[in-house]
Length: 68
Image (cartoon, rainbow, N blue to C red; front, side, top):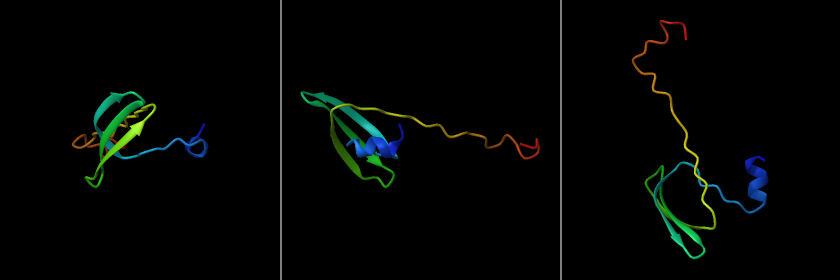
């Protein structure tokens, strides 16, 4: 499934947020985040799915000289 299909089913995506805390409550969880602009947000959720991306740290490896 792609993101558009899941959004049509009512699932909300909050991209580029840093999770600060996740607290359980009776209906699921409350997730406290900070977005890329520094705004704090609280989300009341049934289920929490977190995906972590990685950014390559290639500084100082001189990849251009190696032809990469």
